[in-house]
Image (cartoon, rainbow, N blue to C red; front, side, top):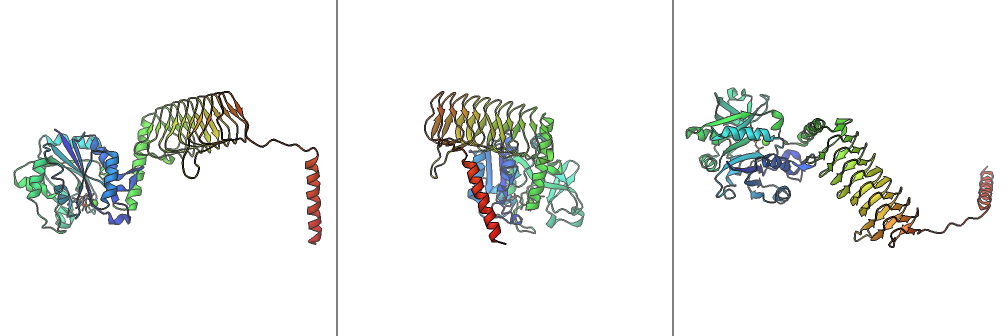
Length: 451
Ligand code: UD1
Ligand code: CA
């Protein structure tokens, strides 16, 4: 059965106290919306429809960045979850398969859970995802009769007896597209909040003699984010799960709780991650690498056998080939560092390429920015860049070339050449001693005068 994904993301999220639409707040470096889209993507949806309202331009941008084919529908007035699904009707025109509804602010639904819902659909017209909650929580209650779901009652509309039910509605629902819209057409907004409730389709389905059921998942999956405090909890929950997965996958985390991962972080087996390492978005680390303490990586690729840090920063476009060494206080941005090259101390390498086995001395800087434009530095293989070389881009240093330390290199250095670009040293015999004597005498005179 083909699937369409509908993600509800129009709400303002007042309790976030933010100018940013709620679903764009990030967990593990990715908007919550993307977490939900990624979970749904495992069902290989034929169409993905995002219902947006507050901050629709920004929501559209984020949705399309993750999935260029996503359709964003405008729900200008948020008249409830039922209404939100109703506005997707045009976007789902001509789609005859099943629709699964997810919430953009419920980022942790697991693909396996969605698969179980799909399996339950074989015998039921409507499948709802529930979880066990504390009776004080104000979720909609799932009223079950044997394995049939007879009704979902919103907390505000529930009797005391119904409020004692702890099996609660996550909001995730699965039904055939035309069934869902027919059922929604039969709902009304005659309830405590004057909204169209998606949950009412269950009651209507039962009245029409359709079978409806609910399956259960762990409450950690249905955790919704409504405030910054929830966001912080969600981040912590994500991090502990992601760390545990890496450990299972054969990655050593010396101090797991101090390592921060992104939704898309990939780290190969037998890599060692030392304490206090931060992985921003789009980092891939191959097997057998070591990322030393206090390093910050983002948009970077580290190949097999590489070592990075301590205190290194890899920025977007840092591409490290096998066995590359990046040392302490080194920043790499938009640069290819070829096999076996070393940048061990206190350097900035940006908009550059560094050839195989080249050694970059301490304090080397690619001066890539002239205040208006960025320029490239190209360094060949087996070269030796002396300490404290300023490479004023655009500039090329050839294979097997050298630069003298302290050089300011502004012109091409040919293959095999040595570039010296600094003032000549002048030595004056005895001059230092004379200077010392003069200065000490001056100091003594001043001390006397102040008595
Ligand atoms: C909803 C469910 C409730 C369930 C709870 C789980 C209904 C009527 N109630 O309640 O049974 O226990 O979720 O968290 O469905 N949204 C829109 N447009 C709207 C209204 C909502 O896009 O017009 C989106 C929101 O942005 C949010 C989601 O739908 O992502 C849920 O809406 P919310 O108002 O939080 O629903 P609850 O009242 O919490
Ligand atoms: Ca909610």
